[in-house]
Image (cartoon, rainbow, N blue to C red; front, side):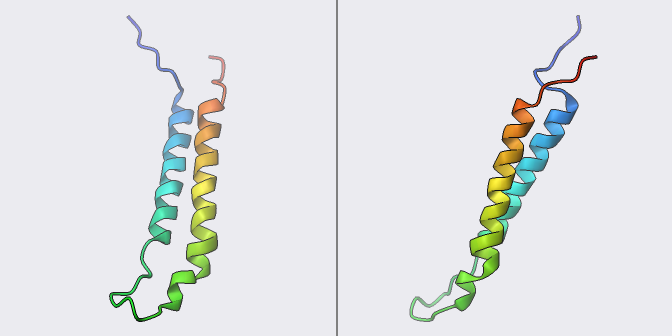
Length: 75
């Protein structure tokens, strides 16, 4: 009996790549706070946190959708 999977190997690789982009985006967005709430840290509004990280997260979700919707190649 042959086991068949819903997706092919390429789809799973794309899903892992999308997941990696999402995780990287959240890691880049983290931090920047201050231990003392009375001290302002300008790093909180760096371009990495408000531009790059959200872009990577949205790109990761787009890759996930593409990986799911991609048609398998005929064997």
